[in-house]
Length: 304
Image (cartoon, rainbow, N blue to C red; front, side, top):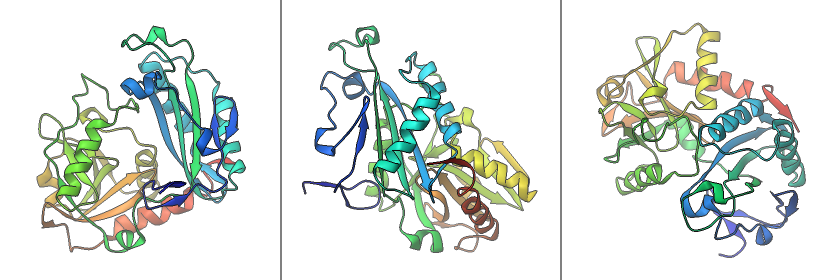
């Protein structure tokens, strides 16, 4: 249907939305990228998914730092400073009258020729979208998700480091397609050694005998901003936390499981591959982590 963006959680009317694109705020119909942009042609670019809570852009500095690291890793020179990107992100929220929402900050390699060579792209392109979207319905936070393990493996870190948040998400998309085929909203992806890397869009945590455990980033997991927030919360709660190699067995036999991501926040998981986790409902530590997380999002970040 024209004029609608289905986003993560259903249809969202474009209405009077304004999108930042290379120095201007434009209507969605005018937010156009060239067919010769290497971000489109080859997934050559980087991005951040950022949340806005009560007029507070959650951990914006951390997101912009990760964006800079991702750009450096793929030898993409950012056309704007961190301060400029921060101001543009906040102004995009203001332009759209948002107090709560989701922000997508994207930097592409820019327009070049039809070859792979990035040096044919003289100027990167920057755009920022701020809108109201949600990843999971409230019932899943109340009752937990049932997820599956999919056949598609995460790309080996030696081929593409998972710490680079690039525009090339086809690997994750294939996992998402398989999850839907199994009737699940999310899925665990293994690395080529059979260890858990992450989900298609979220990091994975379990709770076992009072300890929080999560896969190490070296196993193919993105160093998520929400993931790090949970690590900080665990320290605040004095709950021991380890980063280790994990298998599906560890999740099947866990007392609790939850996923984290900027879109998902902290969402409980109560079943994996048909095996009930713990008592089949969100656990006490998961609930405490989510409670503390929702306090932090209102104060840790940048006010628009």
